Length: 456
Image (cartoon, rainbow, N blue to C red; front, side, top):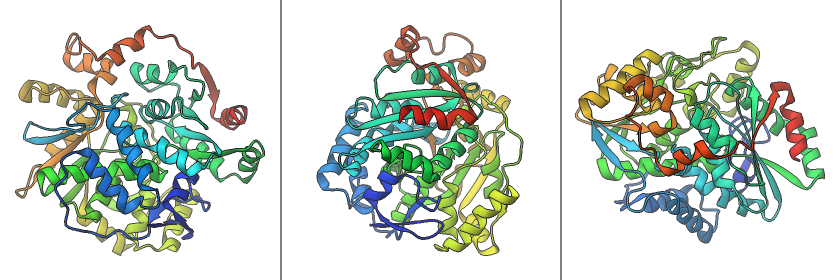
């Protein structure tokens, strides 16, 4: 499988894309072509991942792919790692049974295996911007992995207490969490700028260190996420999917599952009041604007979503010049608008909706009272949007991606349900309260470069 960059069409193998993270032209790597086939029946997540990896990561030796799958399964409960449960007329895909209680654990259990192979003995510093969940999953995934170090940059305000503890208590020597006086967009912009900086990369190489990413700009994050949507297709047949979306990687993974043969109808992008994505899929205009709100679904508090660029490449039939034009418009004008042909493709398959913080808490209560199911706030955004848009419909099942456990957001759950509903947290969450804070560095946005230099 060959990959190409979205802006200038640079070609690379799957192995090279994992090692590089961001493409040299500042764009993202995408599979050059994806073939749809009749899907087999997958007994479990391991078999679904094997199917996806053979097709999109075939450049990695079979031994490496098998090791990555084995590492994933060892970090999730035996049996059904990503169960589908029925609640409130919807099918809920529980992606939160990994070590940090978020869907990011799936790919970030596997990425270190791919990264170690692609590095070929070279030392790698993995830079990661996070709005709350990616950081802790990256730290858990890379902790103790030889030849790698991870630097996680997260907003100093806005994350839940548990999310913050998951990032500030790990004591492994090769993992680092650094709070920034800014938001996720600030962190992501700085990290992408560092990747694109020849001076910074030369400085790293002079120290025999190479820079890469654990964000979903890296194909090693995106590709493993496709597996659970393939598994859902094997279990449910045809379905519509609703995904609470921040950086657009998880819903894009579902889209790639359809390109590989999963029978998925409509893709519903559920947003909180930072509703850039919901507006984009409704209008074909991507306009982050200046408004940013800290909400009770903090992992979605994002205005500039990197993975949309991959969808732009698909919607424009691989026209790198058109993708470059759109990204230039975003940089210069602060917005871009799709051409009519791309809009028609987008509208044919995507829908969007928004839930406010108040609506999110009300939806959490409703699902608990009416269906006996306790949602985290991000998944509640998705079920609220699904109901508002009338799903399930057209005789198809609707699948809602449950992206996090409610135990990650005890403050919001206490407001929604009252005290005592989450009285018995899993040991990994309960123990966080007693661990010492060892990651306590805080920097201004302008200080991110210097923090990276110190780690080099």
